[in-house]
Amino acid sequence: MVQDNFHFVAFSYTKILKTWYNRSSKEYVIVENTKETILIVDDSRFQRAVIRETFKEKFRIMEAASGEECLQIIGENPDDIDLVLLDLVMPGIDGFEVLRRRRQMQSFSDIPVIVLTTSDRSEIQANAYELGANDFLTKPLNESTAIFRIQNLLGYKKRVTTLVKKYDEYRTKAEIDGMTGFFNKTATVELISNILTSEANQRHALLAIDIDNFKAVNDVYGHTVGDHTISIVASAIASRFTGSDICGRVGGDEFVVFVRDVVSKQEVYEKIQNVMHLISGNKELSIPENITLSIGLVFSDGTEQDYAQLYAKADEALYISKNSGKARYTEYGRAERTDMGDKNVLVLTGSRNVASMIEFAYDAAVRIHTIATSVQLAEAMDQMDVTPMHVYADISTQKDEGQRMLETIGKSSLAEGKVIVICREGDLAQVRQAVSYPFVCDLIFEPIEPQQLKRRVAALNNSVS
Image (cartoon, rainbow, N blue to C red; front, side):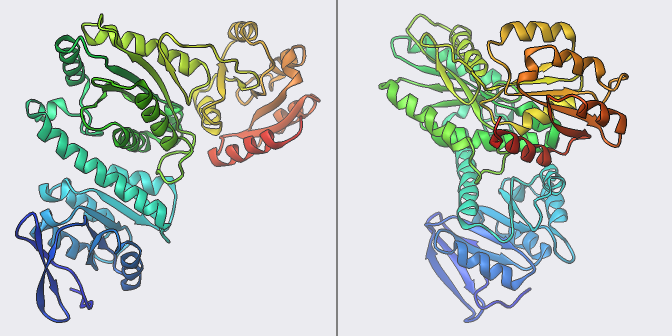
């Protein structure tokens, strides 16, 4: 055990008071339980001091100098700890091992854990997520980002607790989605259908919500980061829809929110705009920056007697949002087609990995058309009123080094845009073929590195046509 001047060991006696042991004076001090308690686990006394100074105004702080001490404190006093900040690299029992043992401790498994790392490498984060970490922070900590993520997780914990207490008939795990704390599809449908039947004279709102670019996140980062993204997005949705609102997860990255007894449509519009703004481009959330939401909205008119009727309308509005450029909401019955103009990107490839990498590199407002065959290309050209802003020609697997594909582009209006050719790394014949066409403005090599591609896309967007 470390001998810090004021190292906290807590014992909970009531919901109002907590007793803290001051090791310096060797006295117990009774304090009011008005703040959430964070346990900092780090073998560096300096790092603990820095983190303590950062958070002491907003949270009550406990400290552990090792993984062993962390497990001991939580084993003895789990009810006193609301969240754990866990350093991954420590002598003895490190952060990864603490996460493994957490799975076997019922008292610990319900306490959110944010891991502290000195690296933002996705494989380290993915490993921590696989072991059950709820979020991560990179040292040195950015105060506003850290507080945002801590409060987001604490809000998630409160929401799940409130949900279970509020709906006693849905206490069992069979009705609650473990990843998000939302109702699962079965419970969602039953709850909403019952309300539509019993309160048909009231006006309600149903939102169909889909995460934009989610397939690309799974393909680029893997399903562990994809699951984490779902969890964080769900927390953001729940933070804006509270009280009697019903939040449900009805598919992999699909959610519904039911707003009961709507008095003002404007309040619903504002909630939607708030949650979309919270997700879109928010660097304080630990999710890929191109993640946004598309939403379909419908207000009940008293004729819908079950969930399916109302959801079909919300889903139709969601479809319009998706096909109008994503990152927006559409109200059923008030939808207007959005002209995409120069927000089209055409990808000529038969590789799902290439298509996902390119989708990942663009923001959600850009519509990606992936074409695998010449027939699909002809159909896409008929549907486009303007030349795509960028055309990606993947010749990396072409037996003729891409000659036929590039000649086809050269004879079409596609050559008027910015054409980027994807070559197989180290294949000089493909490179020579590509640079022989004057309309080719850039080369990218397969396998594609996602962050490098994002930088290339940014350069293309900033360049003068």
